[in-house]
Amino acid sequence: MAAVKGRNTAPEMLVRRALHAAGLRFRLHRMDLPGRPDIVLPRYRTVVLVHGCFWHRHNCRFFVWPRTLAGFWRERILANVARDKRNRAALRTLGWKVETVWECTIHGTTLATLAGRIRDGN
Image (cartoon, rainbow, N blue to C red; front, side):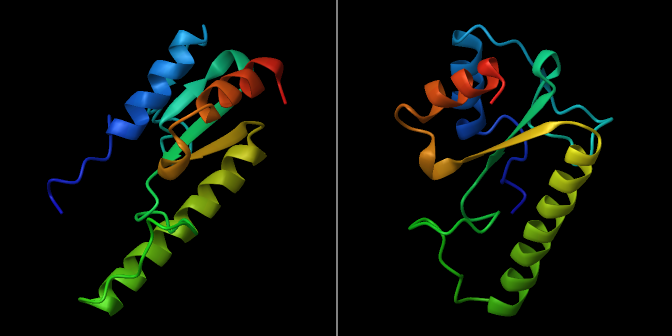
C-alpha cells in the first residue's frame, strides 16, 4: 500500500488537464479546507474531489469487496466513505460547492460537462 499515491494520480491529472483546457484556474490540495480537496476553484467557490472507485466504494463494476483480509478492507473502506461524507458536509457548511468525479466516469464528455457546470455555476 505504500505505493498507492494520494496526490497527482492519473485520474486527477486528467481532470486537471480538462479543467485547465476549459480555461478554469485552480489550486491543489488546500490544507485549510476540510479533507484537503484535490482541486479547488476559488473563483467559483467550488471544490472537485476525484475519487477512485475502489478506495471510496463507488457502486460500479470497478468496486468489488476484497476476499482476502475482508474484515480489514471493509473497515478501511467504510472509514473512507464516512470521512468523505464528513468532509463534504463540512465544505458545504463553509459555503463551498462540492463536485465529485469518479474514476470510472472520467473518460468521455463527462469532463467537458463538469467544466461547463462549474463555469455556469450550476
